[in-house]
Length: 182
View 1: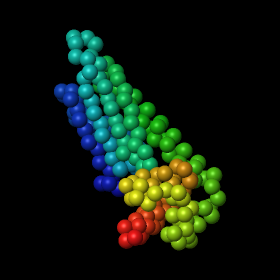
View 2: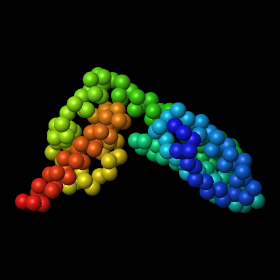
View 3: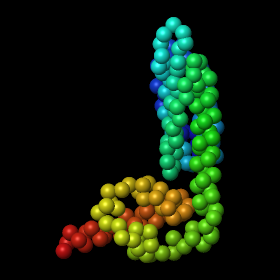
View 4: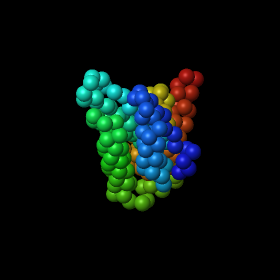
């Protein structure tokens, strides 16, 4: 993935911390996103949550916008950079676990199931993966919501799940149009 495709929003509310904090957070997040297409961006915040003479307490919150599900961590410490490092370590672990779960979901299925989706007609895809669902309800969901459900529930690879989601939505549109014409 090109680094231009990955963005990081910062909200640093602690004076004199922005440069070092943002440089370190962005470096580690870009390393985590490198060679993967599942992460599209992140939001990182640093705030002082206890402001008395001693001890200060800082909170770092990081949300990574990752398919099929975002990942978030919150860490607190008396030193902002230590809170950042703990948050980044925890985040890296969660992202790795998420990637492993998704790869295991696809790995345990025969290779044929990943390609058979492309051989089905839109109507067959709909009846296989959207059986019993109301077409209007399907159209209220985004393409990503449908594909995510297919990846998680049916174990489809990302590209097959998005292809199936497109087919399901096109059949749902046809069915709703037919209902409206009647």
